[in-house]
Amino acid sequence: MFKHAITGAIGAAAFLAATPLAAQNITADLDQIAGLLKEEGYQAKIDESEGQRWIESGMSGYTYLILPFGCNDAGEDCKSVQFYVSFVPQTKPTLEEMNTYAAENRFGRVYLDNDGDPVIEMDIDLEAGGMSKELFIDNLAYWDAIMVAFGDFAFSKDPE
Image (cartoon, rainbow, N blue to C red; front, side, top):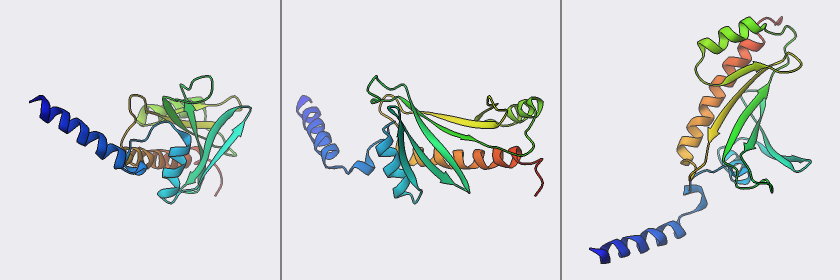
């Protein structure tokens, strides 16, 4: 019984060592996420300022950021990422309109920033081993859908 368990463990370790990086779970490592985005055909630029790093990417005509959270003092070993975009419409939605939108839409956290601009964010927990590439891409598709819907809402009162 123990021999099979040990043989299985050794086989599993050998399999993991031989598995390409793309088959490993996605963690809150910005370099890994940027590589995955590029592999999937998206732009991904890692920016840095004052020791903080983030990814700038885009889809469906919008530019958004991927921000790391829960990192150590060196900015590594992060636990989650946040997809973030702020829109600057000519006619900004009211707080009441934002509250109604938030109540009617399940995914994404929305608010008005300090300038009164509408913002939408979506957090992804990648702690405890991360998530599969397929699930990360599925979350990216959710982000695209909620970002586009919120963009339509944010600009809905602007003239065409």
